[in-house]
Length: 459
Ligand SMILES: *Cc1c(COP(=O)(O)O)cnc(C)c1O
Image 1 (tube, helix red, strand yellow):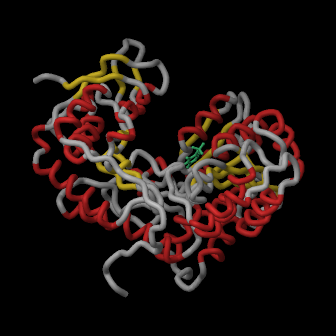
Image 2: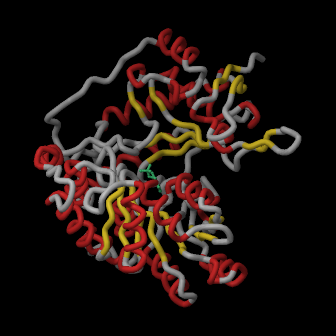
Image 3: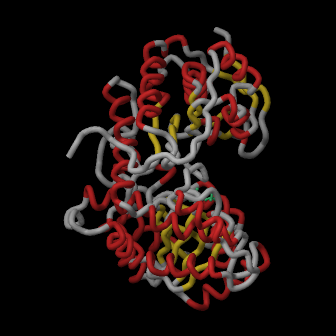
């Protein structure tokens, strides 16, 4: 096999990216109050804020957009969507939603509520928010390896099986409506879950008569990691591995903005007919009729096509190699990153990278600003700006980790863009002692990272 990573596609339609000077970027940061979410996309050269809804669609998907049938009920685009998901997952009841959290809102409204407890390897923020909004509680039971950023292990997204059984016994199986495996584990660095772990989770769940669901946003990336890293799967095809993963599940939620290459959309897939009926009844109130669920016919068409395309091994090889290429390049330069690299993003440990900036001065945000200033690249802080809280005395409680995430949109940037990103990071590394901490000038009571205004701390 050749070493050069090549994109498994050629480009038919292009859009410009936006060049700025260093002076302009300094001004832009000031105007954006040092908050990445306040920057204008037109002032960004390479946008690694998120991999959600930012994929490039294929010519096939665009053709599907034109073929989308906009009938209110019974659109052929829905039946294509339904049949594709049935075939991929083996699950019988398919419910379209406007995006992942639409599916979450429905399932947790039906199953959640006061006193209910949901267990997971790690709940994604919108999943946890929907659980808590229903009055229920969410508990994360990530395996030990998953909590150690720089120590490599093949399946750092696994759930801790002992902790799972212990928690079921402690809390009572009757209070636990679902166990949810997030595949791959987005909040834990995009790390995969092994087939062995999925299967063992299902066995424990079956023993205690608790259904198991999969948060399937990155199911194809997870399947590829299983093929690469787990004994017995090297010769299996991705659709076979995917089918086995879902065979252990009683249902799934999915955001089509991730591994379906779509710019919007999602779904719920369910095994139990009574549960599916309850969900459909809610769907009609909140999202739309059962054959479109908050989406246009053309979206259903694009998602159905994307779900097939994402299982192409040439694509997955390029995707995973390109992420690990960037991760390894940074690691080789001595930049502390989460190892091994996950599927969709590179995570830098800003606390370790900038030891001269105390946690109270947001080293992750300071690093994100430095990366933008140096090369026009947008990343996102996942640390105390995003997850920090205050105690009763209004003293700040920091987050567990101070990370900066570089999320890679699917099929959007070329290998030379990735080389450029590495070059910028190496330049930031050279001059990291000049990076200053930040302080908050203005913040909202909830989800403050989206709107907060900050300023450099003057030494
Ligand atoms: C993005 C995401 C969601 C929510 O999906 P949206 O389409 O953004 O509502 C849920 N779980 C995981 C793991 C995700 O990455």
